Image (cartoon, rainbow, N blue to C red; front, side, top):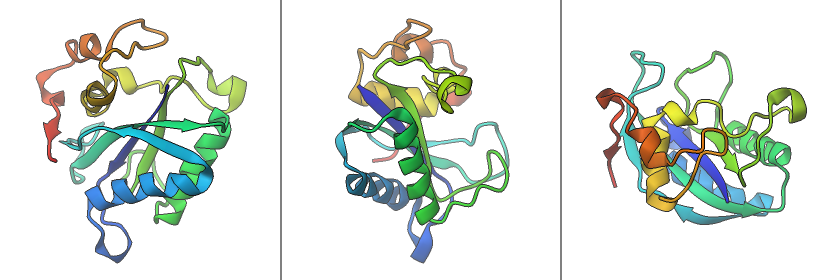
Amino acid sequence: MIIIGLGSNQEGREGCSYLENCRSALSRFSSYHVRVVAVSRWYRSKPMPVSDQPWFINGVAQIETSLSPVHLLRCAHAIEHDMGRKRMRRNEARPIDIDILDYGGRICTEQQDGITLPHPRMHGRGFVLYPLLDIAPAWVHPVLHKTARSLLDTLSDEQEGMFIE
C-alpha cells in the first residue's frame, strides 16, 4: 500500500481554495501513471510547527503506481511546482504540499535513496493520522509497529483533526 499526504494553506492560481488545490493535485497524478485508489475525508488543521500562518486543509490518499519511491517523489515535486509552490523556506505557507507517507512498508533513509520512508514525522501528526484512519484503519507504522489509532492516542488534544467535508 502506497500512501501520500496532501495539504494546502495558500490560495492556488486563479484563486483556487485550499480544498480545490488538494483535489487538483490528486487529479494531476494520473498524467504520471499513478492511480488514486482511495481518498480520505478532508481535515482542517493548525500549521505544524505552530505559527501565525493560515490553517491547512489536509488529507491522505492511497495510490497505485509502478514508479519507484524516488520517481514518485519527483512527480510530486513536479505537481507542486506546476501548482505554484516555491520552496523558499521550510514550513512556509504553500498552495500544495505532497508527501510520500508510506511506500508499501519500505524503510529507507535519505542517505540510501534520497528519500526517507516512512515519512519521518508522520507518526506525530494528527493531520496525517486522522485521515489515514479513514482509508486504512488497519495500517501499521513500518518502524514503530503501531497502528494509526494507537499513535493518535499518544498525541496532545491540540492535534485533534477537524473534519470539513
